[in-house]
Every structure is written in structure tokens, then in C-alpha cells.
Length: 323
Ligand code: DGY
Image 1 (cartoon, rainbow, N blue to C red):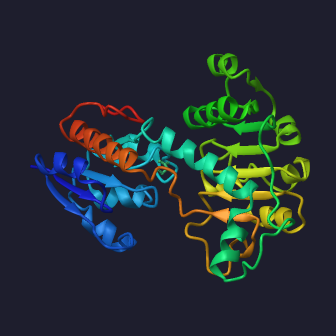
Image 2 (image 1 turned 90 degrees about the vertical axis):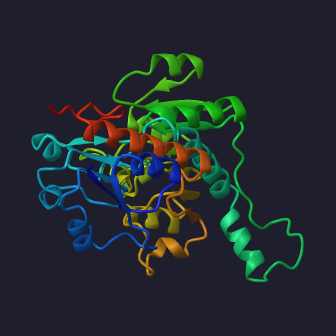
């Protein structure tokens, strides 16, 4: 019977599947295990079920040792994992694609409305006992019908956001993508453009690209300079895609109307981060996939990945090929 370490509490569905086959330890602390504890816990494990906050690198792979067969990330994103290093050692890596598409797309739409309609200062106004009268000139926001939506990264989640806002709000969709997305393009009358054009023409910009070397800092000072002054920027992908200092300046100088972020760099933000103070920046604690349904299915997929890898089969949601 192999040993499996699960680095945080996750829905029981996946845990039960693992428990019926392996010796399973679940870290149930409120915070993630400190790095030295994590490395000690995974020693001798055949499988590890990781979160996006766990760095899977050479030190991690060394600590687990040669018995490690697979690492199943409880996320669709896998920028926390050195996949090449794992592949070299014959360790399978898997993720949980597809099942969190709707949950994350809903979060992006929610952030767009919340940021564009000034929900954050309005809620603060009520909770800080400032609400005195019905005010004709307070918390004026943007409307979305017929406006232009720019999707940066037209993958599963980007398409789901575009679909909601095209059919629901009649928004015109433009997008950037490494490849032309013919089917989505036709269904949503969406046009593929370059990033510069997208930034210049969009009223709402929603980021859905994965974090890679060439997308780190993709939205910086020069890019904010191209945006419309009333633009709204939404990020449910990874915080590192935005240069946050440039974002603070763009919001403070009203170069940008508002931002809605489900992800930041780092997570959580430090207590003195200027972003926390800005009424025009609504921030969620990375809850894009936080629905009962998505998280339950993610736990099952991660368990399926580990069961396959430990049993010597390819992971059903694998990211590398190992022999
Ligand atoms: C992911 O899956 O990559 C999200 O960021 C968290 O669910």
C-alpha cells in the first residue's frame, strides 16, 4: 500500500477514493504546511496531492524520493510545478481542467459588475455607517450592454466569459490567443486581434492566459497607457500577469476606471499593499473555483490522477508523458 500526502483539506469525495487504496495523510492546518514540514511529510510518498501554493521543484522531488510516482495538482493552473524536472525523474503530473470553467467564468463576470458598478466603496459606505440619503451623484458606474469585451487568452474559461457577456449583455468580443479559435469566433462573432488593438478598443479586459515566461508582467505601464480611461480590468488567471505597481498608478491617476482581481502577486497581499486601500480595486481571495460542485469534482479528478499514476497507468488528466 503506497503512501499519499494531501497538502490541504479538500472535499471528501477524492479523499475517500484515495483512502480506500492508500495510506493517506491530509494536512488539516488552517495554513499550508511550512516548507520544511511539507518536505518531511512527502518523504517516501508514492503520490502527493498539491495546491497551487505548493512549489513542486527539484527540492520537492528530492525530498519525496524515488518512490514518488505522481503529483496531482488541485487546480487547472500548474505554474507552481516544474513539469520538466518531474518528467526527467519519471514523475507524472496532473491537473483538473474543465470542471472549474463555469465557476471561474461566473467569478469574472461578478468582478466585472462589482468593479464597474463601484460595489466596493458602496459596501464600505454602508458598513462604515456613512449611508445617510439616497444620493443622485454617488457611486456612479459603467454600463456594459453593447460595449467591447477583450479576452486575453481564449481558452476554456475565456470562452465561457465571452459567451456569458456576448449572449447576456450583447457585448462585442475581441480576443488574443496563440491560435485562431474558429468555432468560438463564429459562434460569438469574435475577432482575433493583437494585444495592442485589444487594449485600445476594449471597455472590459478580462485576463485568462496561463502564467508563463512570456505572460509574466504582460500588462504593465505601456499596456495601461493604451487602455481607454473608462476601461475595467478583470483578472481571474494569475496575479503575476499584471505589473501591480503599474496597476496602482493607473488606478490612482484614473487612467483606468476600476479593476476586479481574484488573483494577486503575492497571495495574500501584504498588509501595506496600496491595492488594498483603493476603492476602485475590488479583490477576492482567489475564489474563482470555489463552488461545492467544482471543488468536489476537482478532488475526484486529482484522486483519479494519483490512483492511475501509482498503479502504473497514465494520468487521465496528465500534463506530461512518463515511462
Ligand atoms: C486554478 O485551478 O488554477 C485556479 O486558480 C484555482 O482553482
